[in-house]
Image 1 (cartoon, helix red, strand yellow):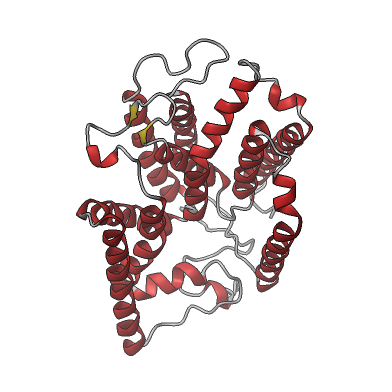
Image 2 (cartoon, one colour):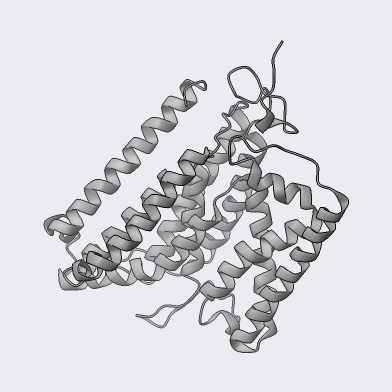
Length: 344
């Protein structure tokens, strides 16, 4: 007789090796792959002229073109994986893991304030660009459910960061002729929409689904039914969170447009939350997008178009090597997990 652990109560039936017998991740992968593929196709169709230009020149369309092309490849991979694979291991955070991550975050913050700012003064454009790319690769490596989905979120974040007017050439990118998008998407509105509004909408629609979406990531949490009073309280809290986010978005520029963008991003955040896509990775990639593009341009301008500048400087070369090592380990672990589903 198979006994289902209490932490998995109320979820899909689990086999003895901790995997779902059917549909472990096929539908979320197909759904996310379809959404991101449509976004990539729209982005590629909106490109103007030759995105890459002459060798050694970083045109205004190179970053969005690269992100859109890679996003299309990752989207096809998600769709194929959803169609071909029907078994997926459920990964959960143990309380010990949460304690370790918290200690690392606190320790990293203290180390940054002690030594980080002094080190940053010695970094050039190539070093900064390589460091931010390395940070994104580490964020992908820390994704628990699916690293391929995390890669898709990174590319979506880079695409959203390229919306607006290019700072070097003044060329409008992905604005669709709307003057409201000339300055791009506000990082505050994006964070409020993907995190606060999405959680508020999900809590307002289904408090039990909201609680389960967080409880399922931590092993040992029991899936207990919510009382009526608790469900009502969560719905009120969700409505208040959405209202507060809308007020904050409107107060930024006194524009209803920001509220509309907030609600659209909130709906997208709900979809990401339900299918297990990491929204924090998207926000991180969005914040780094313009900085990465700007520092790559500066590095190529200083080196007169020589991309080897990222390998000749010690800091940037170290970050590039670390990024390659992280991506290689992610790929090997994913292949191993696919071939051997029982392997953690």
